[in-house]
Amino acid sequence: LFGFFFDSPREKALKREIAQMSLQYDLVHREMGNLEKVIEHLQETDDNLYRTIFGAEPIQSTQRQVGIGGVNRYSELEGFNNSKLVVETTKKLDIIRKKVYVQSKSFDELILLAKEKEDMLRSIPAIIPISSKDLTRIASGYGLRIHPVYKISKFHAGMDFTAPMGTEIYASGDGTIESVQSNKRGMGNYIVVSHGFGYTSLYAHLESFNVKTGQKVRRGDIIGFVGNTGMSVAPHLHYEIKLNGVNVDPVNYFFNDLSPEEYESMIEIASKTGQSFD
Image (tube, rainbow, N blue to C red; front, side, top):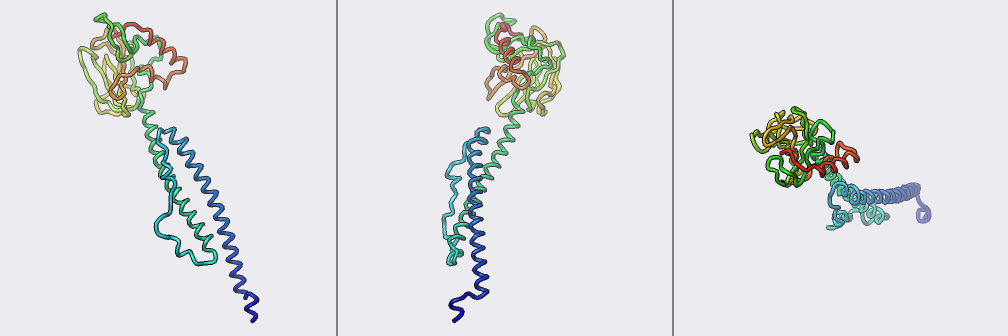
């Protein structure tokens, strides 16, 4: 009769444990809610900042909205006094686990993109390819110019830099020596560097070379020396950049070692030169 009205010591201890467990589950449930907010913030930053910086598409919302469909994976947790709390907590934990997995895969992709971006920034031909920064050495810019021999207006596909014979010539970006050629006419002695990412650079009318085909070079490495070979009227470097096989104006790429004032001055000087040296 006593047992019908009063709990035994064992039952009291068990009830205390159940109450404590329920409290712990509730605290864990709340903490997981906070964790889910942190993950959502990471997702938002990922899509709107990191992926924007690296030019990547945002992850589709359908990929982020993970589900737990299929058979009832929680049936073994049902049928107990606190089953609802346990099942809800376990479901939330599964959702968080899947969201973390999706986000971790995204960060793995961003790490690769960052590495590619770093490689690209090192590879873009972004420095003046001769040792002197004296902007008065710009003899001819990109565009229509008077040919020094034929005295007619012809398209000049690069820039000419005057310099003494033997002046060092630098690779303007990381890359691989694609071609080393020697000719008595045209470009004379010249080098072509393949930078990857669609970029190549050409250095013509050289006195001599310092590299061979297939050699890896870094931005700033000495690859040759100013000369007067081929169809050239004076010692100078003829320099070209191509992007995806099409010539582009080199002056737009000298942003790595010039101040804004020097850069503006270079653009102005290059636009005013009337006759090319080749």
